[in-house]
Length: 217
Figure 1: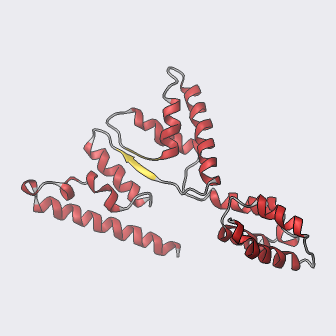
Figure 2: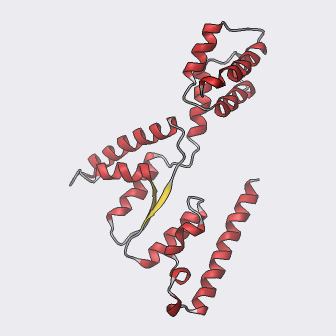
Figure 3: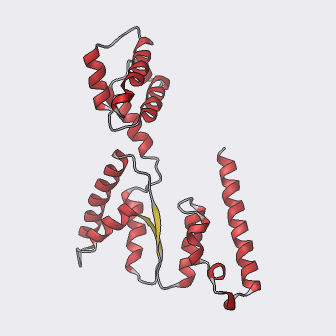
């Protein structure tokens, strides 16, 4: 939050405390504001609402720690995999033929782990430690997960991993066209049959993504 957000924050805070027939001093409001300063006003408002609606915590006036717990809980749903899943993805990059779709945190953590040779256990521990620190820092800073492709030599794996990344919602179709040869081939290499097959496949993929989105609504 910015200093100019204080008045709006104080109104929300006072309203939350008024539900319990309580009030805060000016110094307490300032301490509260400082404790939540790294979050946006919109995020803090959402945390207040979550606290008030909580069947257990909502029975008591909110403390900064209560709101931070809600805020960190929301951050854990940002699409970043846990360390075990991240390692399973990252370790495939050892194979130069393999294609992986990973986050910046995975790539940086795996670079550290790659410096440890002939010790799989030590490499994994180093990855886990570095990855968890990077993810925690990214979430604290409010940075969203950014996924990108690291292409290997196997053309079939490039395409299948790219399309799976789209299915998972990590990337948009436009970002992976390079992995679908017929869609980026030069004019003199154009094959109408292959293009139609790929177009049908992309339409089917888009439809499956839309259907999945409707199922969640």
